Amino acid sequence: MRDLCLAALDAATRAGASYADCRALRMLRQNLACEDARVSQLHDRESLGLGVRVIADGAWGFAAIRTLSKSEAEKAARTAVAVARASATAKAKPVLLVPEPKRTSSFRTPFEIDPFLVSMTEKTALLLAINDRLLKRSPLIRKAEAAMTFKKDERWLMSTEGTDLSSVTVTSAAWYTATAVSRGDAKSRSYNPPPRNAGWENIDAADLLANCDRVADQAVQHLSAKECPVGTRDLILDPLHLALTIHESVGHATELDRALGMEESLAGRSFATPDKLRRLQYGSERVNLVADNTLPGGLATQGFDDEGVEAQRWDIVKDGLFSGYGTSREVAAAIGEDRSRGACRADAWSSIPIVRIPNLSLMPGKAACTVEDLIADTKDGIFIEGMGSFSIDQMRCNFQFGGDAFWEVKNGKITGMLKDVTYQSITTDFWNRCVGLGDQRSWVPNGVLNCGKGDPMQISQMTHGAVPAKFQGIQVGGARAAAGA
Ligand SMILES: [Zn+2]
Image (cartoon, rainbow, N blue to C red; front, side, top):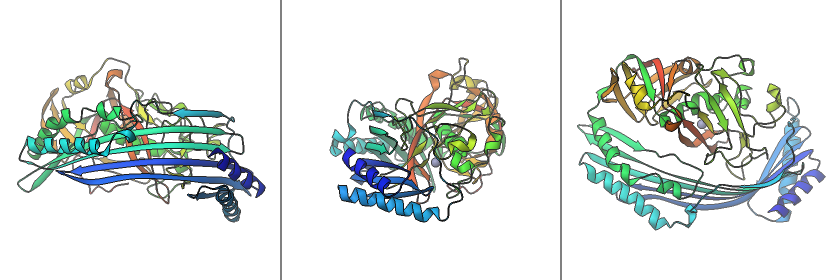
């Protein structure tokens, strides 16, 4: 692979590129799903290819190949330069990259059991056993769905600046949903243990079967839950729920390409423009949101990004103050930074890297506090678990979130289940209403496996760790029609 990359870089330079990088990638993907007593999806795919990215005449060009030969690699490099030259005729200003030290290194996800060495038979047997247990728990459970996904990427990245890197990353995840039906109504409950960059041991650690009875019981309980009240309530949000709230209202809002107006497709702008950096009170003083692509097991932890920039940890919101962005080498200079944060990734060898949300987590509170303490300290509130529907405007400002399970809290105690709960807020108003955080013991590294961005769309993944958190006086109920974004 290194020989092919070197050949492509030489060809790009000879064709007139002022910069080139070449990324070869071998991707293994497995998706398995079972519905009730049948296997509904078995997807097992290997894809190998090479992408060449160049700057020529001050503009980007990119080309990719799946036929791995020296002549094809050289041809792709020449095509990328031709694309750059054509793009240059319409450029507003030349592309300039902030410096990154030349490095030679390799990275590997630590894992105990390669998930691709575990048989499909064993995997589907576990999924079918989950469904069987969910369905047998109650006659009201009419639908059970269980799924797993595994990824393994072997990556080589070289550049005309002398970067020479390689990595092996592995992701393992599993989840399931039980749906109960009665009197013309259907309600569900899901189990989503944290997806991680880890091996099959992450599936073993998830206690999938041990949670089936609870999940089925709560799906049934969900059927007879009370309607969501309308008004303001204090909300206690669990770490899994917050993973999605963080993703949509902070992660996407602080991608610098969006904030600069360079990424407008797919709800692609942001209210968090550079003039607000280190000025805007994004949240209350207790809110700390930290980007960390060195996080062990993190879904965006891969040693270096697809521009060869070393993985880093930095503040996005520090003591409530808006403090940083996710950046690439192209956009970092726009906010006066002299190095990229290393948040530029592609979802395949055939995709050009774009600014991507890093692992981005809500840090624990300093005082000893559990979710039980947050509930005990709430007079009139709702405890929301898990991810549900969401809607957010293209500026990442006005939003509405649902959830997976909702619990009424009265005078410090959970008094029953609620259904169809949604809450509405404005990003900075919401985070400034954060009045309580769980401590380190309650921090859970949940994440997102299906973040869509770009045009054509790319799918990426990242971890959003969080502690349970309390938000005071949030508008609930009166759901507007939700639309994905
Ligand atoms: Zn996303």
